[in-house]
Image 1 (tube, rainbow, N blue to C red):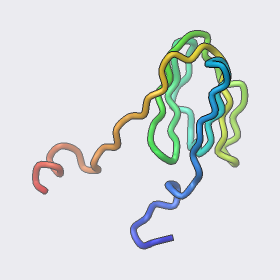
Image 2: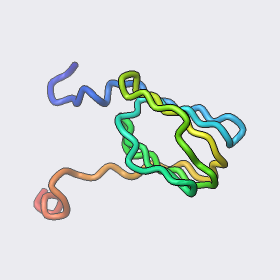
Image 3: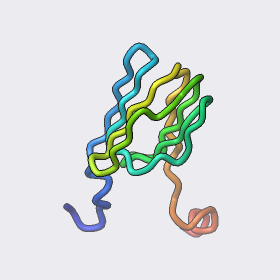
Image 4: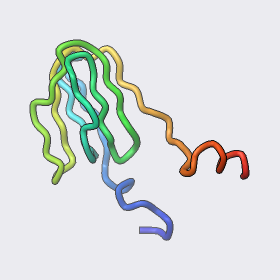
Length: 93
């Protein structure tokens, strides 16, 4: 690992979407929320936001970093990385 590099970013992260109804996510650190209309999953590459219908987590293994979900997936979107320290820190740079 290089100096200053975060170890969790070395964890592989992949998405496997099968027919818009089965989703496997690797590199999972935690499930932030999950309800029938959507989910938010913190991964090694940022927060993955999902939207759709009848979404549910069918398996979650944080030791391996894998989540499997079912439902109808209409949207898969990553939240933009934010600079630590907020707006003031970005303005001072």
